Length: 191
Image 1 (cartoon, rainbow, N blue to C red):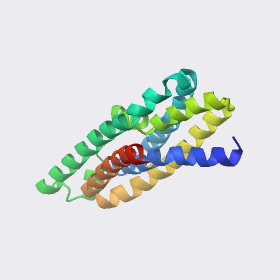
Image 2 (cartoon, one colour; image 1 turned 180 degrees about the vertical axis):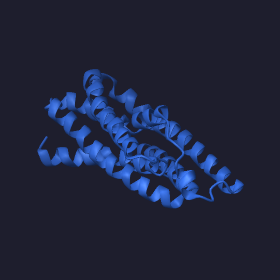
Image 3 (tube, one colour; image 1 turned 60 degrees about the vertical axis):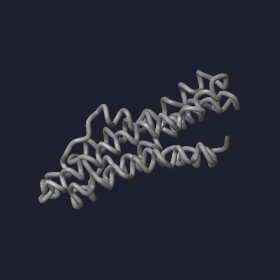
Image 4 (cartoon, helix red, strand yellow; image 1 turned 90 degrees about the vertical axis):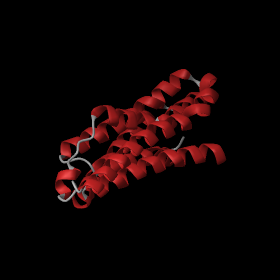
């Protein structure tokens, strides 16, 4: 695999994590949380290909058969919960102060679930790396670093817009997560 191909692969794998980080950024108050989000997404994107590499190509069919359903279920659940909570806030009028409603924190278990759900594709990439005998250490570290950088950018950008939008930011973030899950499902079923 050439370095240019690795760059494209890393950016491609990072896109779901970037979008999830933007939606998480809508709900965070401090920049340290953005760094934690980016670190978790980057770590999962680096670790999942390692797991896939060691699983090898023997189980690739089974994993690829169910990965889209896992991603859809987790992201749909998290996004749906965000949408329901934000609609409740908007209906009750609690979102009069955008800064207060945008400060709702995102929990560590939620971040971990998102990181796992958005990195399932990286698991399959690890399986293909095993099949093609690709240089794994540098590749996995590079994928993790690119994901970290893009996720940090996304979370910080989401934070900025989240403070402006208030409870509507949580609604948008939830819809984005649901959209990522639906996109994953459609891509798997039709492409």
